[in-house]
Amino acid sequence: MDSRMFCLLAIALVVSCFSSANGQAALTQQQCSVQPVARVNCGEPGISATDCFNKGCCFDNSDPNAIWCYYAKPNDECLF
Image 1 (spheres, helix red, strand yellow):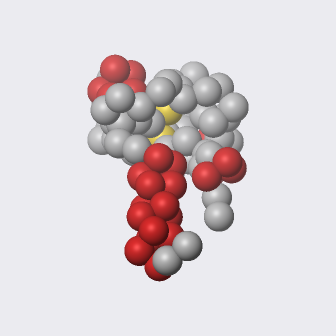
Image 2: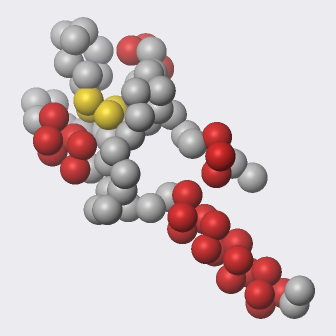
């Protein structure tokens, strides 16, 4: 396989792993099971669940002291 074909294949794999929120499948409960202390903020304070989901993030407001809109765990299937 020549280097151009390899590069195209690598780009296709990266794009499929890191698709934008538009058209992205819903996140699973497992992907969103992030401990409150380990959550990385994905939205501004007071963001709605809908706006958070539209950004491709997880939303959990069950703990008032934790970040409610946060990034999901990385998809292990897409790691190189």
